[in-house]
Image (cartoon, rainbow, N blue to C red; front, side, top):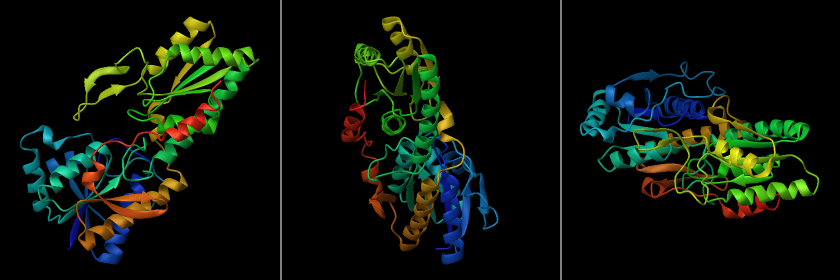
Length: 344
């Protein structure tokens, strides 16, 4: 094998550049490979937007957020001609194997084209930490760190002004960020997608705190959390992306309005949004992303295709992509039970 390609798909994530750097360094210096950087995820492979990656082009990118290759939420299977165009451009640019860095949607596409004969290895990327078969994905630790710092800051102003602060964090399907950051920052109530909530129970928790002299509270809510009385997610737009996902955002406003209406407490809402996934990765994410990149190149050279690199315990292992695309990893409810000890 002489030439491999790498692409980053889906939402941007702290640590992507660390993966790219590791792939280029290990591939060129240790295996004598050339590395093609595919721009803007699957979109770049559809259009042939590909550049050569060198040791110089990845120098200094380790601490940078985002991805130097850029990204998109393009689904090549949304166009009947998409898969053929992918194959043609791989052949045209002499890419013999592919390293695909992404979350559930990007790796779902990777699995489909691997079944069509494309030789590839996946790298798990999601700040939501909801990919199965890996204990952690890079980006999660950075998102939790940012959310924790924000909640800490809101905690102090909540206490100063005798307010309830409702903080919305990312988490479409799972409550990993909300729960871990909530525990770390001492949240008084945490609402997650895995547990439909009663707004009256939330108000009861806040009244309980008020009765024992705590005239302020912090409520952390994941963007995908749902009231038990309502089957629909709260969305910021009715439009869907190429994978059929609606744009979430605004559940905190609903929760805040209901708390204020039912309790008379003064409420302020903060939606952290994309600030959670931007900026420089934490040391943990830099190291994990580097380990993933190294392992991915080694799997390619060893001919272990149709796999994804995975963190299990403190070891990097290879798992089948079929296993990864079988569903999402829900929040560990034992951790949520720990969080509940501090509610109220």
